[in-house]
Amino acid sequence: MPSQIVSLVVNGEPREFIARPGVTLLAVLREALGLTAAKRGCAQGSCGTCTVLVDDRPAPACLIAVETVADCSVRTLEGVAVGGNLDEVQSSFVDNFATQCGFCTAGMIMVAEALLDRDPDPSEEDVAEAISGNVCRCTGYRPIMIAILDAARRRRGESVEGIEGTAPARPAEEAVSR
Amino acid sequence: MIQAVHLPESAEAVAVHSARGGWIMGGGTVVMPLVNSGAATRSELVSLRRAGLAGIEVRDGVARIGAAAPLSSVEEHPELAFLRPALRTIASPTIRNLATVGGNLFVEQPYGDLAVCLLALDATCEIAGPAGRRDVPVAEVLASGIAEGEFVTAVVTALPEPGTWYYHKAMRRKLNSASIVTVASVTRTADGVVTSTRIALGGVAPRPVRAVSAERLLRDRPLSPEVLTEAGEAARADTAPFDDAYASAWYRARVLPVHLRRAFAGR
Image 1 (tube, rainbow over the protein chains, first blue to last red):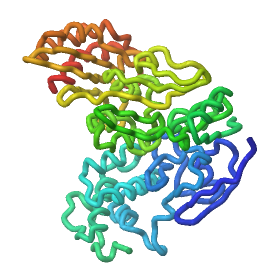
Image 2: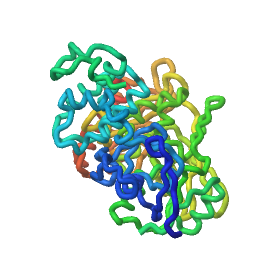
Image 3: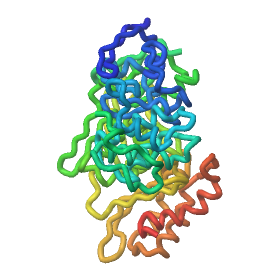
């Protein structure tokens, strides 16, 4: 079977590309569509840095043969910011120092987006479970968990003050971009 | 090098590609790592994603779960809530959005906790292939696999009666961690003693196994810590533990009675 034209809806826009058989969604995003936020880490689904949302569910793009998700909706980190402004999760990652080397960040944010879309008020345990497929070798996870809980509060329009262990943050009103 | 990815839209069409040597792929969590690393031994993939095999029906106390149902959809099904503790420690939520029920039957130990559950439930696999369809006990599929060209289309199980389901998994971490010992059981009691029991173990043999020695020992006896420990020690005869990065064979055998006891007594 030769290469074929495959369509996806990526970050809300229909995209077409030529895919050779068995090429991964990750390779298509990075190499055909120029969307390099999702990273190639382990290429076996263990590290989570390639996580994107497929039909609103987070999954490692390295394990998806792209033909199998033809015509599906795919959301990547490039589609998260609104009009050039960081969304609540992104700004919360910045304010809470949840990014160090940055290699896990795209995957962590996509998992957080999916979690907060489903559950606007997750517990710490919910956050730990949501990110359990995403490896971070810099932060020790604590700042990431704080950032996701903080993002949930920002999205709910609550004050960001008084979160134990939180770095000084901008007031919620300034940080919220939509 | 993969030459083709087929996306058949019915079980019959899957069978055609499977008979030609295509590699059946559920969610891709087992197949794609091999594709990515160049270790794939076949050149054509047959995805089940559009084959209409992902449905879950629960009727009259019997669940029929399509082989291509993602683990996450089993986890979220209100009438399959008893399986949630088992599902929540299988890999991560992101993997469970892809990994399928059928695929879990064929993963290597110490993975495959759902297969251990299905063995305890005495589930039946619906299988399709070049010779047509057949129903096979999950125990047989786990013990000896299926024929070339065959594939599982669904798993059928009676739901356990309230209060008869037991599950416990020992692992290195609380989430996303492979099994050291997995215990799943359907056990009925009356007047304080066991009237019937099926116990399946994971993590302690190359395939999920029934702990028939423990089952025999528990019959007509109470689920007391002493009896359970005795049963767990007897269960060693049913296992063939292995060394891996998570635990040694020695350790698995050593702690088996503890975790069998905890599955029933909670401590």
